[in-house]
Image (cartoon, rainbow, N blue to C red; front, side, top):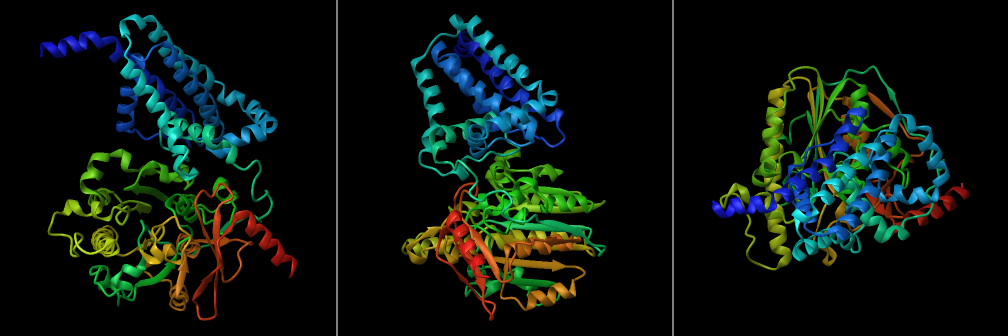
Length: 557
């Protein structure tokens, strides 16, 4: 006790500075949130604690390091928060690059909006100035520690070092994350790899015609529950003919006339690409206008159709980038309760869904899973040793991984069934339940593992649909299909909400599978259905190469 009192007495000014630093770093976010109906921040207790701890070490690192860190963060936040105040979303590395490429246009637009965002810069001078004043006033009381200085330098260098070996998708901002967290990610990537970003759009504006939606007067269900799975391939689901009974509970619905299940084809091979492409119904390669402007975003269409929108995710906030968060009324990610997710995994997601009040009004609920993400055993091990069905401690790598993966699919089946049963309790007569996955998974095929690889196996996903009042025309159309693409699934969900999607760029029988980093010259596959309903895939090509192929094909018409 005496020793603790001595520590508190010795470092009391450092502790005060740490708290001031954390408050000053996140306060502008909440001020900005109240200034815009489209901007929201989720409180991330873990990040705030890490920020406070960083502030403590910063107070002990000396004035040179303090000044360097403060100036860097101040400049980043000046750009970040002004951009957010103007555009309503955090800046990305690609957006930073455009500042220098399109500076006159960006400057004139910023000056035109100065009356709405004028308070941002003075606010940052007050917050950063306050921390600087406190630091220099009590610098002697803070003291100096070489270890603390090394920790600060190492912490600041960690993101740039990671950027040197990781791709853009890992550094895209999350719209509900604290801006200083986004800035640290975004500017670190830009400083390391900004020279690699395109100097002009790979697909020029005006290349694609606008995509739109028309409202119909058809009857729509009161509750729509949609599950977006993670790394789930139909090739390992008993429901789809896999020899192992990995989906015993969902297979019970196999003969229900209200239930349809089809082999699916995902739109991308990574979560960061698949989610925005799916929820924005992006089909054509490089058609980023549908991501930026949200003309047919599913959450937007749901809101305009009178639904309250929910996003409840077992993954983190960075996966919400460009999915349409400004149209989501109830947005929850793993950051909202990291300890409960870590302990109970998707069982906690089920618990949250059971607590969700759907008794009044209309609801569009999206549940985002992590259940089949590697390492697979971590997803179900909280269930205890009695849960795993297939041994994971014997055999070669492929066999052990396949067994762990199949156990994770068993766990996923259990979770889906629990959610489905809860859905039936909450809405027994006027609901729709649907499910797919963001992408598939390689488990040793071609000597490859994981996803993020443009192979046929990484795009094979399930599609399941249950409707209390089946749309006979839709069901007949689905019966005649061997495969349903992500884009078709999104159009089906939109149609259930009462919308007809009009995409004048879409060609019958043609679809696309997008790679990582869809804001750059990314790799992709072009797919085509044959007369039997099966599909073939083109060789891997980049977005710019596709543009040349597309121009060649159109010139031959």
